[in-house]
Length: 114
Image (cartoon, rainbow, N blue to C red):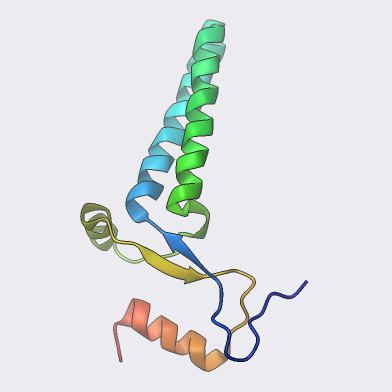
């Protein structure tokens, strides 16, 4: 099913919160490490805690827009976004845009040209 916007309709977007995407990544990694340690120690308690961390990290990832985070750029720019709590809107992957719109978006986001 094609979800491209009709004439005059705004394309669907997704909000990306860089601060929360980094928190989600850290929680997901911690969850995997706890599961690995629990497996090595044969500890059901640690395995359960690791699964809880993975589920919590997945929830935070969904909230932060981890799966739509395509900002890129320098590491210092990403750190500034995290420190300032910036949010960004990215088009839905199913959105169809013209070549001119894509070029304008690239210049605005990455090349900072008007």
